[in-house]
Amino acid sequence: MAWNKLILGLLTLVSVGMIIGSLFQLEFIHRLEEPLGVSHWENDKEAAALRIGYVTASQGKGKGDKQNKEKGKDKVVVKPEVISWLPRMILFHSFLSDEECEFLKALSRPRLEISTVVDAKTGKGVKSQVRTSSGMFLSSEERKHPIVQAIENRIATFSQIPVENGELIQVLRYEVNQQYRPHHDYFSDSYNLKRGGQRVATILMYLSDNVEGGETHFPLAGDGVCSCGGKKVSGVCIKPNKGDAVLFWSMDLNGESDRNSLHAGCPVLKGEKWSATKWMRQKATY
Image 1 (cartoon, one colour):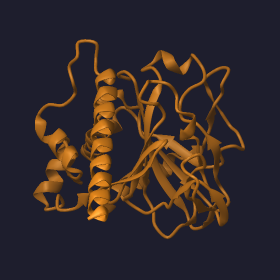
Image 2: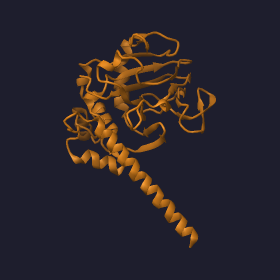
Image 3: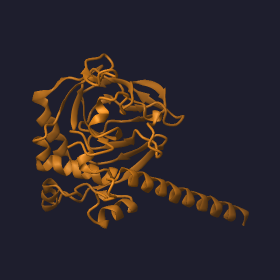
Image 4: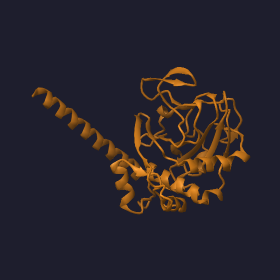
């Protein structure tokens, strides 16, 4: 009898904690809305799907999503998996289809250049050994492509941040021994804050399989142990599985930059790691 009461008490405590967490999340979303208080949700179906805990991979408002539905490609269910609450991090399995992954790689391959990092003083991109990948940004015109629209609408659905608050998608390729050393995605300069404000969240989408190493490492997420480029490290490591995506927040619920969002791209040991990144801001960027 005592055990039953204990279990019931624990379940009640967990339920209350989930409710409180949801209320904090809703309050944070409210802060991201425009001054007029108009939310980016067009109807209650999206919010209801998120409350249930899953959304079909083709859900969204882009033409690409409509085409997928007509081809019967809306059967894949994207199931969110909470990885960490500090920093807030969610892993989405099967977030992108094979077709979407291959499209982004084919689109970017001819235009890859040596990646840069943001200079803290000038706010401009500079080459650095901190980041040794190759990459490119999709153009504003490419953003209008049905497949890109479908991806961006899906990101908005899961992140609950309007499409117009997002930067252009960046596609990256990491070859053997290439990596991105620990860094934060939020800005420490005033130059980049002028257009769209601070970065609120990041979604990192994996576009390739058969990669050894290349994990995304969050050293301040918990006290576990994981493998980063073949080495044992503390924290959380996300394996780069094709089609998966990890969403993490660079801001606390109080609007302050979250130092726990520190992360790194581990060295690739074998194969090529392809990924696509989208950063989301406090305000519209276009």
